[in-house]
Length: 298
Image (cartoon, helix red, strand yellow):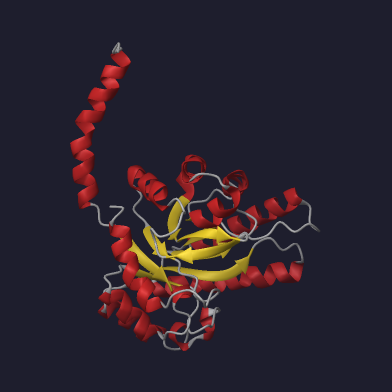
């Protein structure tokens, strides 16, 4: 075999870097969170107790005791000072508030309702010192012109980013619904470019429908990613069948490797969709398994 100068340099560089990478990987501790979507009936004290016991750094609030509009809950309205103390006493953070706001509606009344909800969540995030609020793109309805819908999602996202600036909050668009193709998400993110706008990468939502590899997606969207939803599973009759991490066929390792290599500093937030899929395992089992399963990738 003839060794060219290029191959020699490449192999020499690889050998030189290997020990460093191995040491770095061993020392990396992922920042773990879980979404309350996985424990839809739990009260806040039990959520916090579990997060502390299993050594999570943060929690992502997506509903509480099946109430998805958080300002309706006393923990996030009249008793908010008590909630902040409870979190501080347990050295736990809220890393993201999951609003249900959809940004695709052309109808003026529906649009205003969803924008108002998102702004309520931004105000709440400020009170909780929470850095992120999640919103959905979310649909590309057949009765709306596709390009107009994409433009509208971008405009709404930009408006929310501008609103969030004064609150020191970043609005994150999740790859969700019909807006899961990397090219469409790129167009939206470019049009809504703002320091207080970013992306939640739910790689399962994308991969399970588009078959676009995480490598392709990250190459296009990596600069916008601020937060990551982690889940595993397979597709059965066109629907997701969720499993514990590492037990399905989703490209978890490829995704984590990309994020590690890029120096990603955000949370790996476990989204166990018990709220929508009551048949899956109980949160006590899922939340205990996740940190151990994720550590194998580090």
